[in-house]
Every structure is written in C-alpha cells, then in structure tokens.
Length: 148
Image (tube, rainbow, N blue to C red):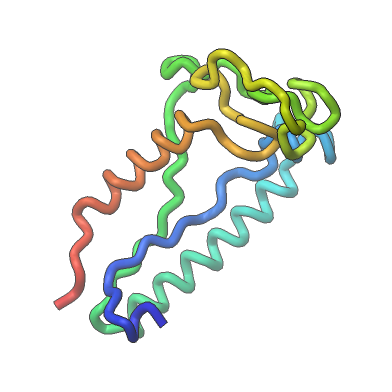
C-alpha cells in the first residue's frame, strides 16, 4: 500500500454534481432542479460515504494526513468567462454541439474559444474548469502537514 511505502499525505477527491453534465441531461432529461437530481443525490451519497472513510483512515493511520476534497469552483461562471454551460466544445458522436452524447466525434473540430465552455464533450470539463478546481484544491491543501 502507499502508506506502507511511506506516503503520508493524501488528497481524496469526491464527485462533482454528475447530474448536471450534458450527457446526463440528454440521457435522463432535466427535472425541476435544472439537472438530474437523482444523479446528483447519488453523488452526494457517495461523497458522504467517502468522507466517512477518509475520517476513519485519519483515525487509524497514526502518521498519515488524509484530506477529503470536493473543490468545485464557486461563483458565477459568467464572471470568469464561461458562457456555454450546456453546449459542448467539440462535436459529439451524433454530430451536434448541443447534444450531450459522451465523446467527441472522431476528427471533429473543437470550438475556437474553449475557455468559454464548461464542457469539452458530454461529460468532461474544459481546461479552465480543471485549472479553477486545482487552484481551489491547492488552497485547501497548502496548509496540510503530516502528523508527527
């Protein structure tokens, strides 16, 4: 295990609201929440159980420091330039940029301005989203120190 090999600091990431991806919305349709509430509730249930496991490991691994993270960028997406919240940056498998089908179509052209899109394809976020998530995670982790 990583712990037996000397690792002492761990970041454990939770799931985002998976019911808001274009793929989920296309497959299940929107409900009153604007997304697919049952999928978001499933992600929340998973995250709660994952966080409990992280807390238990912190108690049982005397020299380790585990941190549960779910660093979803906060604030209005419009203020950071993301304006396409539902369209995908690339053409997806059915030839549409408004469809949430999972992957980009082979040899399809990407959009000219991916920094304005939340989703690259039906489920995967664009670089800007990942950069913002990484910054949020860094702010949480930068004070993390191993137990002595």
